Amino acid sequence: MGEEWPEKDELVVCTVDELKTFGVFVKLEEYEGKEGLIHISEVAPGWVKHLRDYVREGQKVVCKVLHVDPQRGHIDLSLKAVKEGQKRERINEWKREKKAKKWLSLAGISNDEHAEVEMKLTDAYGSLYDAFVEVVKTGKEVLIALGIKPEYADAIREVAVANVKPPSVQIVGYVELTCPLPAGVEIIKEALKKAEERIRIKPSDKNTDGTKVECFYIGAPRYKICVTASDYKTAENILSDAANTAIEVIKRNEGHGKFYRNIS
Image 1 (cartoon, rainbow, N blue to C red):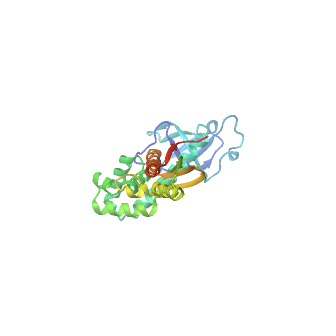
Image 2 (image 1 turned 90 degrees about the vertical axis):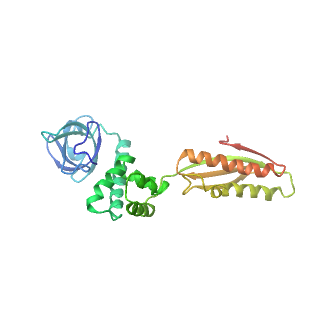
């Protein structure tokens, strides 16, 4: 993080450094040289008899910032104020950011410009990791638009493509397809094939990297369409498009088709 001190109510990743009778001293991982105190009353709900029942030296913990006094160098923290889900999410975020910092170091950016590039990416996307994800999805142009040199933009994109696995979502829809013609079975197969191929013949679509459409037979006349995409909005659009493609093929061959987002 670029800030020198954490803000009140911020969730910070810490390493337990020393246990005292009155509380726990920790080092703040994202604020170099900064140390905080978790008073024994903020370690866990209720009465804490033995601190080692809750924390140990070297352990990574997530704390909520209660108070910051830069003049005195004091940071008061709470362990009990952080829920388990918040802890998992914050630790994962911290780990991702550590990875992203390592990736940026592989891009060959000069020492003089490294901090500036990192700040531009973090300011634009909220985190370095999210910046790398966006580069994979959108391309180096987003970097150049931030004022990053083209040669650095090329290098960052190469590192991003080699290391980032963009998040994905999966949704399912259903189609009913019937065709009275003698070749009806083959026509239905062709309709489903066209549905699967639809994503590959629309190169103008955005956010389709890593997108997949698969069709499955679940019992005539119903077929399942599974879509994997980078986000739900994209997935929903592709699902609708794939279903309509299959239905159009069927209708052109005297058949009937209907799309269901869900079936009971």
